[in-house]
Image 1 (spheres, rainbow, N blue to C red):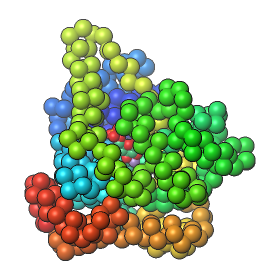
Image 2 (image 1 turned 180 degrees about the horizontal axis):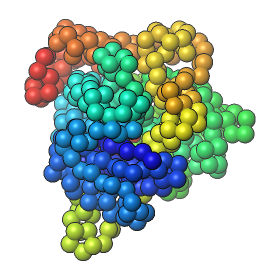
Image 3 (image 1 turned 90 degrees about the horizontal axis):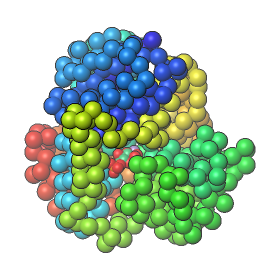
Image 4 (image 1 turned 135 degrees about the vertical axis):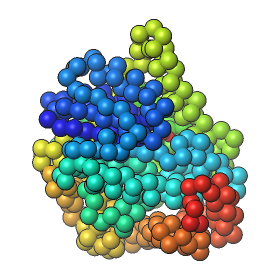
Length: 439
Ligand code: G6P
Ligand code: MN
């Protein structure tokens, strides 16, 4: 049996992840589940919901709730990391400040992602150091913390030997939509894919060895990456803003008839259109705060008053995927999943030290990438520009260099000019004073 800690226990995702863990107790038997967060008050509410979920399955798991890293990580086998530095209040600023300059306002793409990256790298490194100090030497950190691409680069650079696997649920969520369109199970899909996190392309979507990508493209041209019955897609992506995101993929494909883009590429291909169709006063952060956040805390309050848990906290691909990866790690199953890994020749025409998102076999020694081969010059060029933006950003924070931060912003395709990049950066520095002491 294993001891597992969830760092960022106060996240609204926690109850869903816990249900996924409970569904998989046979594959990943747990003796202890620890919840760790720097905000103990918030976490204690979420843990009430998590405990209610656990009680449906078992009373044999020891549950620990703590704000002390030693208590959290002492002797654990696995850590799930999902920190959100600055919480939704800072996400709101990450989205609204750029929009006030007519630049994309998004949590992980463009200036919002760069700002979030600057906040997250040092706390992530701190977490890694705690885990190294207290956990079993064999412990793996399975990391969802965003912006995953920048976090992966920061970890590669600052803690190159850390046992961290950086993962993202966007590819699997996209595959869930693909499988609904094709009328098959998600597990039946075998995809080829290359890129950086939130910046990549599906190049093959095989079912029983047959590439169904052309058929999917035909569907997307008409309906986007959606089915008529939205209940078939992941519950978390049934919000109107996500529906819009999946529809917009069609836009990219109208212009570039190759592959199937990760939905996040729309922010780089069509930043002007995205800004035109954004509500500058009410962004995704507001939707999440008024929706997912509010409803979780209301559910908990209600549960405490009535003993009835109104929400069952369904398991979506987000919860399923992190447990899938962990089971493959724990049991050395060598299952094939898309995760982030150091390139090292997997894509020969990208730098060896790029953190790429590609198919990997997940073994107990970590992810082993499958050889991808050379990618077309256009995609290489787009990726190189984004990669440079992210790598220089990590240098900016570690060196405390304003100049490099401005370079990173200027290189990001979401900006129309260096002048606008500087204006947005300066406003973000003001808003992040507390988080970026070095800039
Ligand atoms: C996807 C991405 C995550 C991102 C999330 C935001 O799942 O892969 O990286 O954090 O969407 O979703 P939200 O519902 O918070 O806007
Ligand atoms: Mn992601």
